[in-house]
Length: 208
Length: 208
DNA sequence: ATACAAAAGCTAATAGTATTAGCTTTTGGG
DNA sequence: CCCAAAAGCTAATACTATTAGCTTTTGTAT
Picture 1: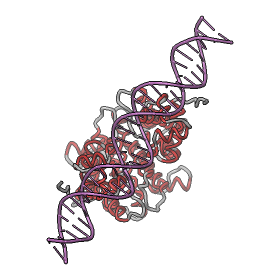
Picture 2: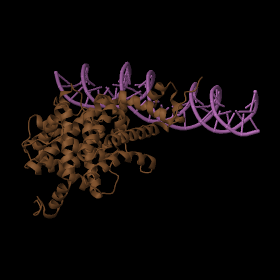
Picture 3: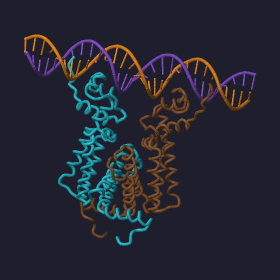
Picture 4: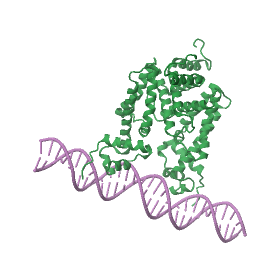
């Protein structure tokens, strides 16, 4: 019997094709083995069970997404960069819904390789925000809000959460436009919050 | 042997306790049956298998979340209402992480009862936005962006997506403050987008 | 009170899943 | 050309869900 010539990467890629076609719930060693024309236990020579396979898929997807975001932002700055990244983010989730879903399981804290790869998409967003003059602590908060907006939209959309007939593309454009304005006026938002914290509701006296 | 006295509701509530403690992945008929002191097939007298149990949990959670949001908003309007709803939304996800996760599987299109219950949280957001003068088509788009922001944050947070030490509460306050400003200036955002669409990049001549 | 039918529980059987153990075969380097 | 490691396999075990069919409880109508 000829050998199949598998590698961890090949197994993960076949699994990625499977879940992009049939959804993350369809992921099983049995299904992947069948697609590869191999018995189920053979997969254990390449990935560490179902958990290990999920990790490989996550690494694959994080690296891909990081790449797409980077490419989309190169040569651009400020609002243009942010819009481009937002479009690329959603496009990846559309093109690879299974991988995007697989990406949402955070890697283990001691898995430094995975941590490094998962950090790439976040680094791209951080770089984009630097173009708005946001860095340090505030960059962390701003990246979190930006990730929340993009991921939240894409996640709800992919789960069929937007049932009404209104154009979903238009909704996303408005979300992105709102995000551009939010990061543009980030310092105002920060001082509005600090103002609340200090005097319990009023706007601070000086600023606009 | 005495009877257990189960009902669909009781089964769903025990399952909800289980997944709030151990995560949605721990949901199985076997685990629920064990907690109820009953054999696995007995559950089929009350729920339609694992799929049916998931549906019941979803209904339970959607009704609870809808209630919490409504209660949080009553007596408030405008930014205060929005902030209160945002806090209640995140609090529900913290208090009931398993139920919140279970909520993310959209009900079947022909399941009108589920559709009706799942709509309640969305209706609360719609009502809040009406207090900002947003309705009709624009309310649909605005509710989508709002849901995206809130769900995205809570979802990333619950998955351990915010690894850095910066205060997550502070990030959320900034997200909510940004959302308040976004809905406040919603008409500006809309016209900015329309401007782009018409003349390919520039701001429109007239507006601020 | 009692009979009875429906509801609620059970056991047993089937099928699908992951995982481990251990065997066989291929394959590439000395 | 040999031989050890790698890559595949089968078999066995232990879960899981689901269905079929049996028994027992329980509430209601006579």
